[in-house]
Image 1 (cartoon, one colour):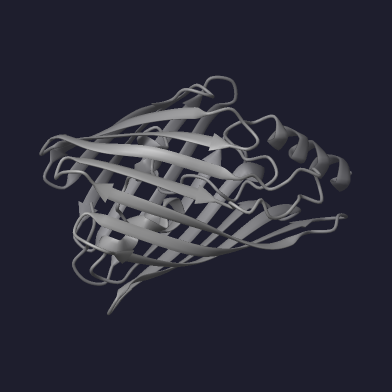
Image 2 (cartoon, one colour):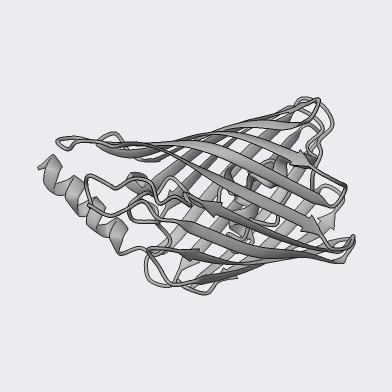
Length: 278
């Protein structure tokens, strides 16, 4: 019975473009990003440790965070994430962990990142990744790969960014017999006003056709933010809110998939001293 259930979950994953089918532990992490259409590659906040390693280069203090995403209100499709960043003399180190799935079937991603600001406007990052899976009654897999990213501020208002996950095409899922995808993202960020920020990106996975994501963040009060965004393929409408509570940053988000229903996400970041990034 468990094998039938696990196989059904795996089949569902291959039909959901929001997932990467052969590995679902990779994807936009953080409720801030989730509320902005899941666009994340041009962000420079804590959750860049999962979304673009270049984005943590501006951090000035150690920080730790937790995030939880409930995809389509199914615990079997939940994504649990954690991270830690540590500024050092030359650059910033980061450690991240994702677990997608549940007790009988799960996929895990462990990353070790290094990011450096080469100038006030140019940032680059490299992350080594361990990917593993476990499924009751099936052989799991264990693979090593990497991802890298870059961000460049054209001017104080406009920035461009890019990242590539698994460029060597490493690994194949034992359960679905599909290769772990190569994923490339290209994005931009724009500061329309002091209290209004926009972000957009295109993602191309070797498993799916390109997806366009667009998001907005509005500072409603000094420490309170509201967000909205869209994803084009698949159709996905998102919204969210965030609170800056001194050393704590709390974000909540929800999304509505055109076919599969609702996503809910929450994330919490604690900075041990004054935060860096934006």
